[in-house]
Length: 576
Image 1 (cartoon, rainbow, N blue to C red):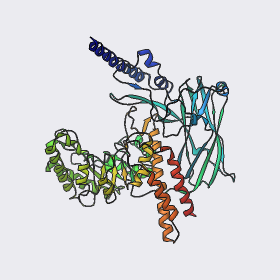
Image 2 (image 1 turned 180 degrees about the horizontal axis):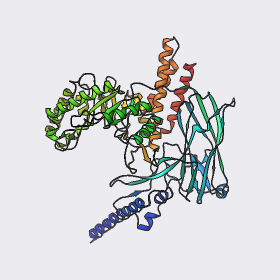
Image 3 (image 1 turned 135 degrees about the horizontal axis):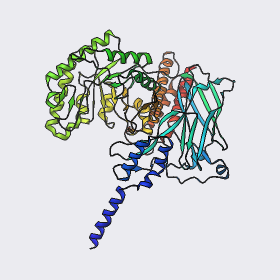
């Protein structure tokens, strides 16, 4: 009897946990209120609430990335204003249910630094004790010690808009996702914090110095809050490495008006190329490059430099031989010499067209994740590896092209990275000794960062330098509930996501190290000492963790600005 009661109790717990919210509760969660205030589509929101109610989707309102904090107790001044301002590092989200930490409320000013021509985020958040409306954000002049000023159009004010993240049966997290230009936020609802994200692009010709100004946050009918801001402009420009690629995968389209805007946003966020199928030829004979050439002309116009990884000939690994597919079929239809020969012919035609039309640097991306076939058994896995090797060998018959493959199993990488047929290789997995060794001998890419948070910055920057990584292919993402999305296109404009902002900071970290390394070369050639500069790079690199997939306990991700500052000071010394 006791056992039966225990089973009934367990069943009741399971059922109660699967029905996360009753209908009324779902609509009244902070997450759903935040979506409604930020004008998320009512039809989609209603559907989402129904899915949560019946247990098809689960809404998560918990953030374990920072210590727990209680709802703030307003001071007398806060009660009078109806809100308080707090400052959370932009690598950590301020979610609808977030409460500010003590140190975030105690901070009173913002200090940032940037090189000439560099973008830098300036963020603050508001915790409302009552409904706030007509919330205006204004900027004062920013002037340095000599009276020189940063132009007002160097600053872009954005509302960090809440959107649901999570597709299929994944848990739903409502997060600040996309940045919308806004000098006024219509409403901030009581108890639901809001982040304002200001991006400053330091002018290329800005003078060195400490520029001081203020941000004013002023809701209608409430007292304004002034936030002192200091922008330190460094006396140098960041250098662009010519042999490193930041190229989003699944990027691009043949909607050329939208594509140009996508490319502009990508370039502004440090991207150099794309992993795309949009450079593929059309036509029965694969010889019509009209659209492909237009894509490449737009890339030149925008100022992208490459690498462009052509994805139209890749074989995608799946869990079975029959489901593994490529451009000419799946299973036996793809893994045969006739298909390899067809691919070789497309490669040759593409090469000839690229020469004629002066394409930017590109590669043919031939296989991805064939290691999945290991689950089908050793015999199938070995057959797949032999097929891939023959595919690479046949493609190699075309002279003057770069060939690339990425791997998701350590044994697969170890046995293939050094094949003469491959010019570039990559890994979709954790760092391991063979990969670390190989990356020093042949251009290597990493496929994915582990999560779309603070790992984005370290993974796209300092980590790449430490492990000699020459390329990375962040998911471009499509669909507004896709957590990997880099920018969202609506209202005839591409809006960058917070994920993209974090990635850009990583790219800039890499550029700081690269710029210092170039100054070191120049200094050595001129007989100057570089001991301190080299020691600074080593000190930073010694702190970078091994994993780009998981958060590393003990590593303070909020110290990356301090690391960047150390590098910047050595650049200043050598640049004199």
